Length: 313
Image (cartoon, rainbow, N blue to C red; front, side):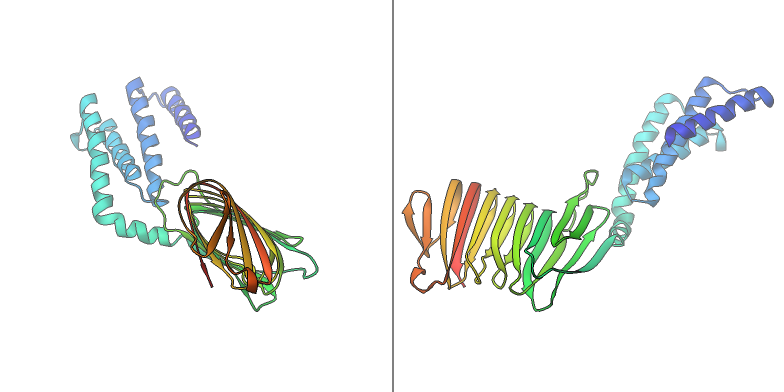
């Protein structure tokens, strides 16, 4: 866009100099081009409030004043450099003191709430594939017949993708690469009908997850997480297998009283609090509720610098 503006400007200057006999020095042309570049970049402040955009807008206007000698303003190169620095400092102070609340209010206007409901095929296994950044996500069951997803996120910071086809849900809520804000977490709630046969594949980065599978027939779950907190309740309705790969994360296992749990783990656990488990060998633990259990849950954990704890529900 900027190159297009510069091309149009140069064309106008050429026509003006040849047809209307208006003379322009090379330095004036360069200063005009720079002024327009700074002004157009500064206009982004009306889209997103940032101090550098306001500073560029102020400095672009200063260049125009200098170019056309408005109010007898005629600055040297050194003075223009100082004015550029002053413009950035002034804009930083203005945004910090007077525009911060407006910026927050403006950001909240980008807050989006989505409620999605999908009819599932009860004769087929439901597959959920989740890829989440900086998210507070709650997966649980409900008495309705449809799969329901409620989400709230700032669309200037996150990009969301929801696709449901052939009983497979793909749900992504990822941070935008060009976002430098420190955002409030996105929030998601996923409700699965009671006793639905389901498979889950969860990828999480710096997220807070509750996976309440107590009333769901989830025979297989796969979790990959980095710097996340995960509260996991295995299914109490069938035998299940869970593969977990965690890095610098906190895993909390809430064990249903009727589920016998076998944990196999490799890697480093910074801390483990598994008082209701019995150590069978160096890498295997079993829960102490074998006699009253109806189902078995096998959990394979690969860990790096993570914490695991558990309690019986």
